[in-house]
Length: 334
Image 1: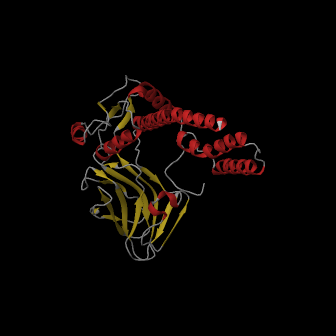
Image 2 (image 1 turned 90 degrees about the horizontal axis):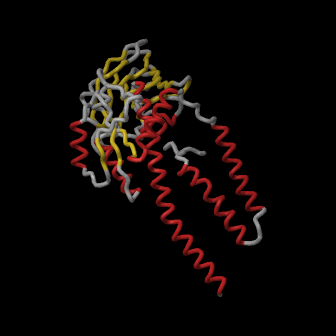
Image 3 (image 1 turned 60 degrees about the vertical axis):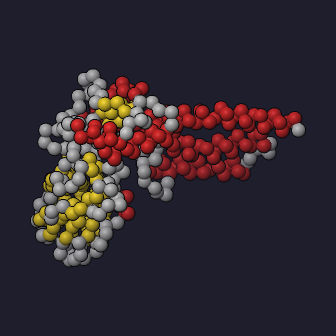
C-alpha cells in the first residue's frame, strides 16, 4: 500500500512538472520555427527571389499528384510533360502559404508547347469561393510563355491553377512557375540595422491587421515583431490571421530579432545545403524500427526498467518530428 502511494505521488509530481515544461517547449519550438522561417524569407528577399516558386520533379509538386483532365502526363528531367486528349486540362500549384498577389503581381511560367493553344490562370481568394479565370494567353510552339500579369485577381490567392487548351496529341512541357515582384520592388539590406515595421500580439484585431495591410508599401515585405504570448494555440491563430491578410509579411519573435537577421545574413551568403538523400532517411527509419523490435524481443523483465525504455522509444519519433521541425507538409511513406 505504501509503495502504491509513493508511486501515485511521484506520478502526480511528474505531471505537475511536465505540463508547464511541455507548454514552454511548445512556445520555444514555435518561436524557433518563426525565426527560421523569417530568416529564410529575408534571405530570399535580399536576393530578389520569390517564396512562391514551383519546380516539377515528381507528382508531389502538383496538387493531388495528377493533371486534371489530361490524356497522359509524366515527370522527367525536372519537367512535367502533359499530352492533351483534346480537352482543357488543369495543373494545380500547391500553396502551403496564401499567395500575396499585391507584392507578387506577375507569374513567370517556364514552359513550351509543340502546337498552338491557350493558357489561363485560375485563382480563388478562398478555397470555398468560386474560382476566377484570367484572360487567355496565346501559346506558340517553341516559345516560352514568360511573365503574365495577375492584376485581374484579388490581392491574395488560396488556390492557383494553370488551365491549358491544346489540340489532341499536343504536349506541354512545364519546367517551372514563379510569382515575381513588381518592377521597383525593394530588397532588404541585411547589413543595415534590423528594420521592424510594426509590432503585433495576440490582442491585435483583424481590423488592425487590415489597416496594416492597406498602409504598407507594396514595394517592401513588412517585418512584423511578434510579442511573447502565454498560449501557443492563440499565437498560431494570430499567425493564421496575419497570413490571411499579409501573406508576405515576415513575422519575427520579439526575443529573436537579432538572431533572425544574423541567420538571414548567413543564409544569404552561403549556398543552400543539399537535402539528405532519401536513402539516409530510410536507413534511419530502419534503425529505429530495429531498436523497437529489439526492445520488444529483449525487454527487461523488471517494469521499472522496461517502462522508461518503452517511453523513450515511443516518444523519440514524434519528439524528433515536432521539436526538430522536420515535417515538410508532404505526407509520404517515410
